[in-house]
Image (cartoon, rainbow, N blue to C red; front, top):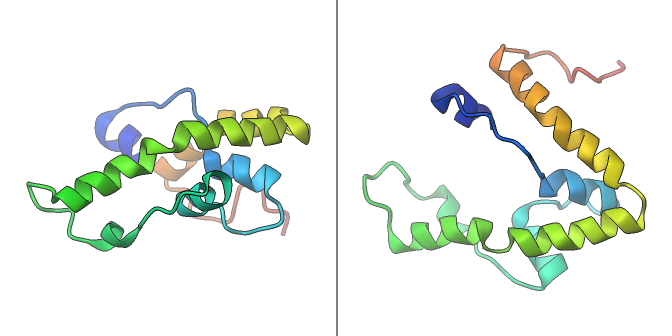
Length: 122
């Protein structure tokens, strides 16, 4: 979001973050990345090998194109499953509040906030 805002002046809205939703309902694990969500929620294994390849070339390889597409291929199904779980545990409202706050976090990042989390109590 910060990159899109900084380089393109684009503000993204509305926002749904599967990582935040996962953290709110899958409290038994610290694995909330796309690969983990695909595996545990959809029983689909995706490869992350290409992630560290050279993306600076003017032409992407077929593997890179497939990787980039697979990053969004399963998001709707994951979102639906997470929404059901959020409703089941009564946390949809807190998830929405977190999503709504993300643009403010982007603003903090872009203004150079480098201190501890704005919410830290220490």
